[in-house]
Image (cartoon, rainbow, N blue to C red; front, side, top):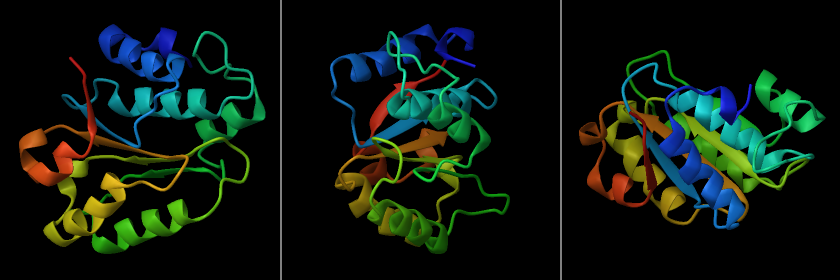
Length: 165
């Protein structure tokens, strides 16, 4: 898959490709939109574009080893967290922070996708604030969320917001 195959999200994709084009990639994103609209798919494509060995026109090639590993979820510099329980806990956040504390092994960036960020419990959200404010070098956090009002304001204010319609 590539950005071209994501339907009806041209504004979000244009914004994300612009960050790559200008080489001004924020450390933390918040992808906001309805369920099943393409937030996670777009986050995955962005992660591939960030670490693609053969990037062309700010799109991932989908064929290099980096793109294939990210697609399969086995890239050592990529982590996707989606919780099946009611809340994202402080243990989940510590896991992310430990992952981000390590040097990149194969890619240019460490990328974490945190699905359904509105499930952060209060202590997890508080623990995550410093990481969002000052992500480690070459680390990108992408939080997806359906209800931005369910997130603490300090957390929202520390992210680059991308709206999906």
